[in-house]
Length: 148
Image (tube, rainbow, N blue to C red; front, side, top):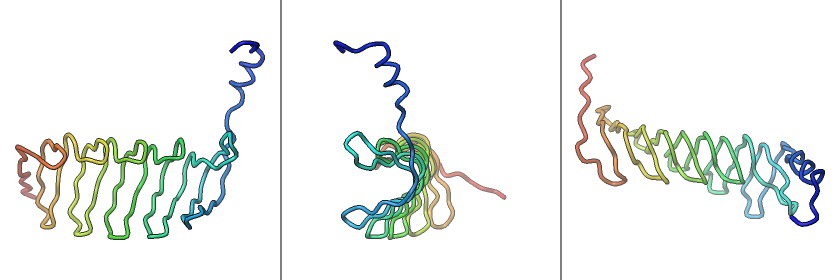
């Protein structure tokens, strides 16, 4: 930038955000307890480890970055559905496990909230199906026979 000196650049590099820890209640009643930073405009930005609870009972406990679910965490819905795994920009993205309220579950790859890639689905009877998942389709799934 015009007029910027090396000292100004050095000072900007040293100005890392200070992480605080505490509780923040949002105007809609949601509650966040964990690590945060104050952004440039003075608002609170979730960053680090924290627990966010919505007024409807949905909880997310895990890593935050840029005020979004980013990193590893656990999202629990009031219905009983649970996702544990990787998040990117508030979406299931990477490796994770999604459990439905009936206790069937999928373990494997997710992309933008979709089962996408290699994984396995375990049904309510404990039968396991493995293969490549493509959002709502899973052509060529194979039954995994367990002879224990």
